[in-house]
Length: 68
Image (cartoon, rainbow, N blue to C red; front, side, top):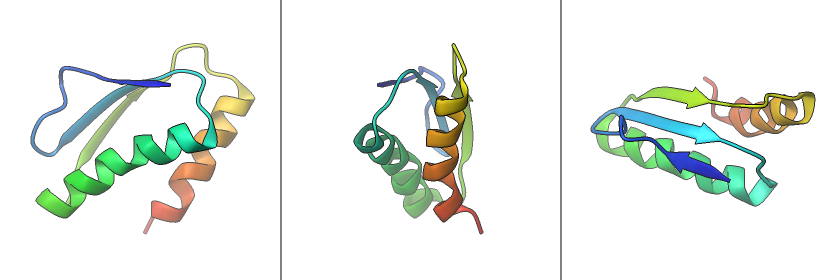
């Protein structure tokens, strides 16, 4: 589960992430991918309330392939 925050516009992606499944994270990372295709680079702001080790590991698993 994630919510797109009002600050999302142009080359900025702002989201609040809750408990997410692998499919949820795939959907979440489609948004920055789309913005990157449109603007070249994007700025990402992520809120993660109730941060836990599983949250961190899920997030890391989704981000690592995109890092350059």
